[in-house]
Length: 111
Ligand SMILES: [Zn+2]
Image 1 (cartoon, protein in one colour):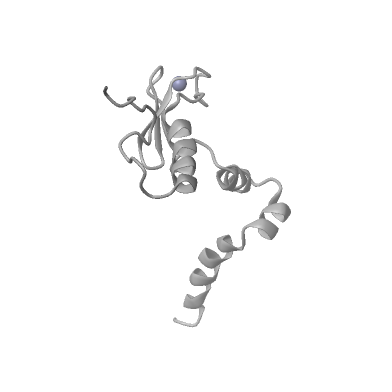
Image 2 (cartoon, protein in one colour):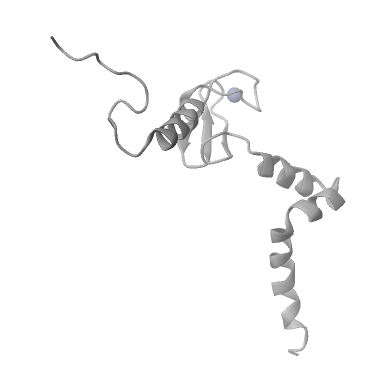
C-alpha cells in the first residue's frame, strides 16, 4: 500500500528541520504565494517577482515592498516618514534613519 501523499509547502522536506520551523515556513510561504491587493488599481492580482519586488498582474504596476509580504509594518512607517507627516513617532521607533544624516555633515571644514 502506497504512503499517503503529503501536500503543502513542506511536502519536500519530510521530517527534517523540526516542526516549529516548518510551521513558520508554511505561514510565510502561504502568505507569499497568495495574491495580494494592488495599491495602484485595487485588484487582488499582486504577485512576488523577486525578493521585495511585487508586480500586479492586472496593471503591471511594479513596486518595492517587504521580502515576503507586499507591505510590512516598518515599510508603512517609512512611507509615512517620506511623506513628512508624523515625524515624531517615526524617530522614536526607527533610530536607524539618523545614520544617513550624520555622514553628510562631515564635509563642512574642507574649503
Ligand atoms: Zn494593479
